Every structure is written in structure tokens, then in C-alpha cells.
Length: 115
Image (cartoon, rainbow, N blue to C red):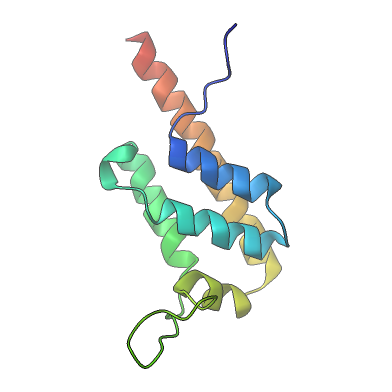
């Protein structure tokens, strides 16, 4: 039995949380960004990584809120703080961009297999 290709594991998990996670689109994009932010540079094609980096910058325009020890407060990382000050339609656009990057990653992997 042949299973569907999922491509990059972390990118797949990010898209899965984007599509099936709880909450509104902002909270789902935040969860996906937190997963993508942990990806190393060599886990994905360079051109796609540049697109992901640009997406992460858009999703993290505000700074995280830190406690007195300099640690990020739970629920106040840079993605969550930015989402609280942004419009839903901005995050709909980010979600569409993220999904397109995932589809492009699958295409790149398929082309690499054929060579």
C-alpha cells in the first residue's frame, strides 16, 4: 500500500496544525510558525526557506514579553504578541502563503526523486 507523501516532517506538522488546530486562523498560524521556527536551515530547499523566513518575519513584528529573569512569558512569544495586534485577514494571507510553500516543497521533493 502506498501512502501519501508528507514532505518535510516539521513543515507537515505546521500545516496540519494550521488546517486542523483549534482556535481562529491567528492562533493556528501562531502554532504553525512556532513549529517552523524550530526547523533548521538544511531541512528544506533554500528558496523555500527564504520564503518561510519572510513569512516568519511578517508573523513576528512585535517583540516577545519577558519576565524579570529574561525568559519569555508563557503565551507571549513574538508570534503570539504580534497576532494579538494584527487583523484576521493578515493571518488568512499568511496561512495561504504557508500552505503554498508546503505544496511547493512537495513538488521539489517529487522532482528530486525523479532525477
